[in-house]
Image 1 (cartoon, rainbow, N blue to C red):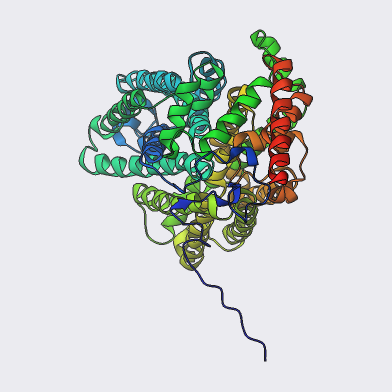
Image 2: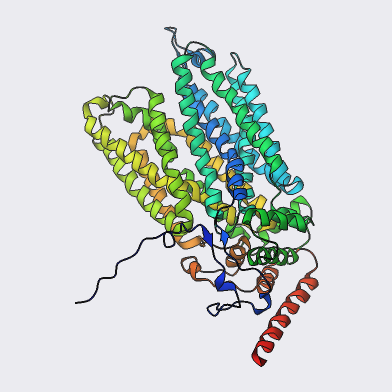
Length: 576
């Protein structure tokens, strides 16, 4: 009888090891296959997976996500505040107040219009003044938007325009924060680092719903019910704006602008590595080779034209925009929109409690996504997430349309309870996969030269669909009720197919390696087995793609020197 093999569960095979080892790259080791013999002088000691600097970077920079979530989470509560309703709503003939679909849609969705514009404007500013200063600038814009809103007394369009101004800042940060984390984070935790942006969005949404509940219960009859919530936003703006003053510029931006030593020092702090460590040397080498194989910048218009005409860039730009569109079309916001109606079926009539429950689930499970992105990779997690959400939405839409009593939902309490469970299970799938990981994919998708512009377009796509869903969902659901869920189910199924056929796995790769994989047209479902070529070969591939900057001949000469050195070292070892 054969012996049953038992899988031993430990921190290493769970991807939780606190150390990153480099023995496989050390030419002095017997088991180092394909190691570069010319790099025997480097330090190959293990590095901590998470350092104090990388943790600080995750917390402070991700406050940009918190501001987005906090601003988004508070407005739905405002619409139910009696004081806010009387000041900015419309009056019925019987003296009661209400918000029409158009007015509430504009107040809620105008933030998305601002974010769309802000994301596009932020790209050239980030390329001009840097990522670090740009984040502080857009934080200031959010604060100005908060001033416009909090100073409004009776003009609803002032609140709307204040949200538009704040949206400019939120949009800028939604592009800059993932880009800053992608360009600075160590490759072994880059996916998790970028995913903290989504985690902080969920924390911001949950915190806003808690503040709304508190002010509604204690300040219901005056403007403090909504002004206190807005005013707290200044504190979070200060944390991000001031905190960025103590963080470095991204290594890739600094290197591209001639500040090589600054880039090296930043990487040493984030990696927690000495100057001569293999991780520092090879990543700087790749950055330098990429820089040398890129072309000189032209005017703004020529830069945008060259980006679209560069081989495989149009493919990646469209892919990023489609992925961000599909993130909105997963239907996560749809659940929050219908939450009040569903929860009434179980006797919970306080919409603020409803929001706290849904937002609490969203926030509580998102940390799992930060683990999944590095433990199981981007592709596997996203495809499984799409499948999970597809099934949940089919069940949810069917129960809502065929079983729930939509006129008096209390009559079908069991169906309502089942739909609550399905909503929670859907949020589990979204918050652990498509919520955080799409930001990770888009942060890795573009080369350094076009990263700001590419991320601006993909982020703008996200905000465009955010606006369309926020504005038109009330009208659509009024016509087709819960059958709207079948549309989202189909979009989730499509999302899984898009990931399988078009998205390359970036787990454990440097940004330069991922760039090369797209240029080389690596088959997505085989991308996890791709073998990284030497830096000089990466540079040659990049040059052949037509994205040149600087002295091409110098890049060729350096590549030739690298080859000669490798051959010389191999010959010497053969003699010995």
